[in-house]
Length: 566
Image (tube, rainbow, N blue to C red; front, side, top):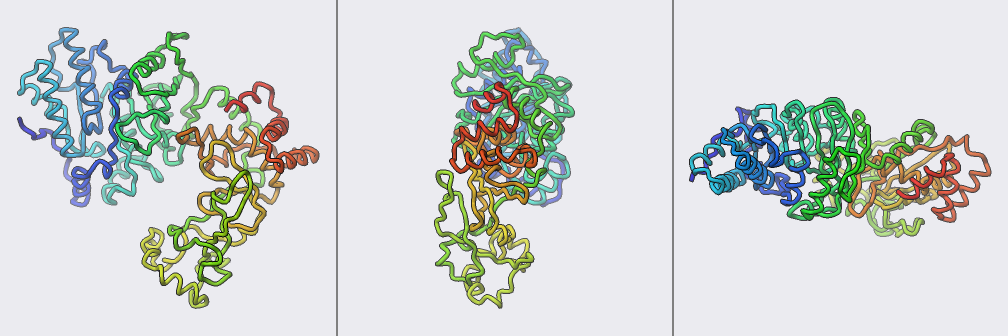
C-alpha cells in the first residue's frame, strides 16, 4: 500500500504563503478549525442535496472541500458504489468525486480507509488506489486548482477565525475572495468557492455556523447568493448534537442551488437520531402541499434579500416586521443613539473596586456591568474603571498623575501585550475604546447582550457602562417611555428577526440589532399615553407594557397574538 497522494497540493506560491499552508497542513484539529460531523447528520445532508442511491450517481460530480477523517467522503462514496451496483453500471468513476484536505495525516489516513472501502465493494487494490489518486487532493481548498461543473458540493467547512491565519496567507485569501469582509471566518470563502464551482442547477449542502446569515461580515456572501443562487433549504441545528465533540458553534444546514431564487423550505431539528432526520429530509424535499411527515417544514419567501440579514422566522413574523418597517422610523432615526460600553483589553488592570484602585480620584469612574443588573434594576457592586483619556479624547499626561503613572508602570508588561498597545506603542496605556466621562453622567437605558427576553434597565446617570452592556441615550425621548416600548414584544420581534440565536433560545441584544427596532415618533405619542407607559415601565410589568405599546403601534388582534407567541 502506498501513502503517496498523486495530486499535488498547490501551485507555486511565495515562501511566506507556502510556509503558512504547510503549517496548517501539519497543525492539530483546533489550530485548523476542524470539527467532525456525526454519521446521522451526514446522511441527512446527503439526502437533502439529492445525492441518493436511487439516482444515477455515476453521472454526477461531487466535491468535498475539507474531508478530514472522511465523515462526508466515505458515506458519499458508499452511495456512489451502491448506486452503480444496483444499476449494474460499470463505468469509469474517476470524475465522480473530488475531495480536498489540507491536513497531511488526515489525507493519508482517509485515503487508506477509502481504498479499503472500495476493496470491500469488489475493487482490486490497484484499481482502488488509482481511483483514490484521482479523487483525493491534498492541499488548501481555497488555493488549489480545481475544475468546475460539480453537481454536488457537500461538507463541513473549517471554523477558523482570521486571527488564526498567517498574515501572508490571509492577504492571498482576501485577494481571491470578495466575500472575506470585516471579521469573516474561513467558512465564508469556502462557501464562495464551493458555489462558484457548481454546475448549472448544481447543489451545495453545508453544515456550518449560522453567524454569516445575519452578522455584518456575512453581507457580501449573502449578496452573492441573493444575486446568483437560491437558498432552497435551511435547517436550524442549534440545539442538536450534530458533531462528534461538543463545540462552541451554532450550526445550521443550508442547501443552496445555482439558479433563480424561489421558495425557501425551513426546518428545525430537535434530535439527531436517524429516524427523525430521515423524516425531516423527506418533508423538506417534498414539493407536495401535504406530506406524510409529522414535521411539516415552514415555507417562506424572499429570505435572501441582497446583503441584508436573512430573516428565517415565520412568515407571519416577517410580514409584521416589514409592515412596521414601512410605517415607523428606526430607533436612531427619532432622536436616540445606541452604543456599547468600554472594552479595556485588560479588565484585571483597568477595573477594580473604586476605593482600592490606587490612582487619582478623577482618573476613575464608577462602572456598571451585567452583574449589576438584577431584577430589572441597577444594583452597583462598587467597581470602577480607570480612565486614561482627557475630555478631548487625548491620552492623559502621566506626569500630571504620579499615582496613575506608578500604577500603570506596575502593569506595563500586561498592558503592552494587548493588540491595541502593539498597534499604537506610544499609547500603550489606553483602553480599547475611548472613555467619555460625560456618558457616565447621562441618564441611559442599559441592555445586557445575551438574554432570552429584553432586559432594559434605566440608569440615572451615575455609572459608566462596561463592554458587555449596550446603552441607549436620547435628547428627545423620555427614556422611561422608551423603556416601556423596549420591554414589550416589539423589541423581541425585531431582535429575534435580525439577530443570531444562542443555545437555550437566548438572543443577542447587540447594537446592530437594537438599531433595527422601529418606534413611533416621539411627537406622535399623546401625553396621557406617555404617562401610562412611564407607569408600566416603573412597575416593571411586561404585560402592561405589551398592552399599552401594542395600542401605540395600532396593532390588530392577529398581530398582537404573533408578538405574544414569539
